Length: 174
Image 1 (tube, one colour):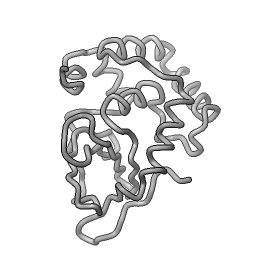
Image 2 (cartoon, rainbow, N blue to C red; image 1 turned 60 degrees about the horizontal axis):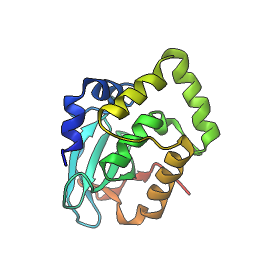
Image 3 (cartoon, rainbow, N blue to C red; image 1 turned 90 degrees about the vertical axis):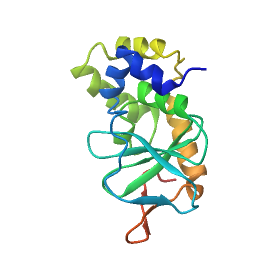
Image 4 (cartoon, helix red, strand yellow; image 1 turned 120 degrees about the horizontal axis):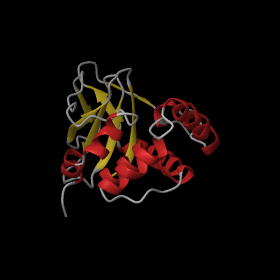
């Protein structure tokens, strides 16, 4: 199976949508601070966002590894188990970082704001998903899965600011 990262890089439609509104850039894998996982598991930055946040693969393996997102403000959360799950989140709810309650209603309100500025968002999203061979779940399912992963597995993926030894704050709370 081809690498999903390679597929995104090769498919302009997918790369453009993930860059915006997904705010996901495969050329920004370096985090601005020195960090490590409390468990001692490997941490590999592979993408970032425009505000200095970083997406990390956790542990050993390939694109199936758990993915932790750390923002530039000292917050972090496990957001997906594997790259396909992360890309589905970014395609279906690219505004996920603005969600507080992670409900479908809240997401629909945020979606409406995006649609005002980008009326072709759904068509662009669908073309991007097709370009990399991903089926898209419903918004409610994506957000429920994000909350489940972030809360259920939180203690196994605690990000530590290495110089001071303190942990990042959870981005997603119970």
